[in-house]
Length: 363
Image 1 (tube, helix red, strand yellow):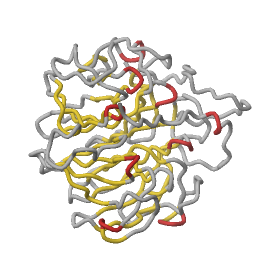
Image 2 (cartoon, one colour):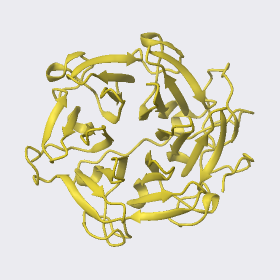
Image 3 (spheres, one colour):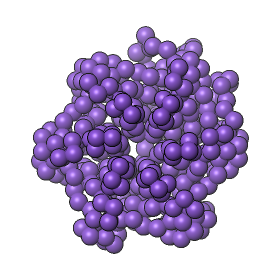
Image 4 (cartoon, helix red, strand yellow):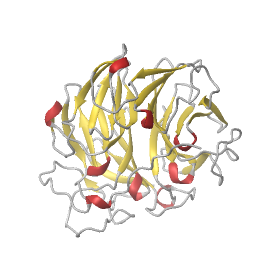
């Protein structure tokens, strides 16, 4: 069930002045994913919805009423609570890190929502999906076998959910080589073709790499705050919150407080792909473009990077050459569906009311 009427208001109406707007809108989008056909899926955090942008630019609601809840049901009759991470499998199923519900949700291509793993309890219990527990699961990714990896931010763990919903702890809590005390509010995860998992380790300002054998190492970042480029061992980030990996093994990072999108080559060299470092919503090339609180990332088969530009309420696109454009969103907080066309009005209304993504210091 996909709502294309644009009649729902969700929770994203904001508290600022009402401004007429025929463009589709979002409310603190936190995650993005893109399929092989060019459809973009958005975890619309502030609206408690999952949205879809077609290749022709039409924005619709895939699932969610806009009200907070945890009801499994069809499409726009299901409910979510702070959907944050989003990922796709080869069959077109959409997986959601439903952070406020401490659950991992699954949406079929026809829009039917179910709970893959997570219960009414907040915690870190492994086992069958219906009895397992998470603490604010955020970023998610899948490997080639259909296993879902979860950045379990509140627990400082990386969890693994099998296709049958069975949950285990993949890394964290000192249980694997080199990971004792390493994770601090992990908020983003991404898998490469070799089965390595990259982690945005937000509060330690670093990007970690976990091999398929469970060995954890720092891939880039000194742990200090900053925006220094260069070899990974000396590079700095400031609240990196999301990661994505392309087919060549390049890792892209949403460097949240720096308002930058960073790129790490397979040898660990860090550069800035786009962003001026000053909050804004300008389209342009490289440092001429600007972001405000960039969050979730996704990469398509041509190497284009998609960004959930959270505080701007926009979905942005960056080409491999660093050219930034706005794919969808008016800049106003809301949940309007419709045709995404080029923005001509850069004005923001009610931006200060956007909910900030939670930061956890662990248990």
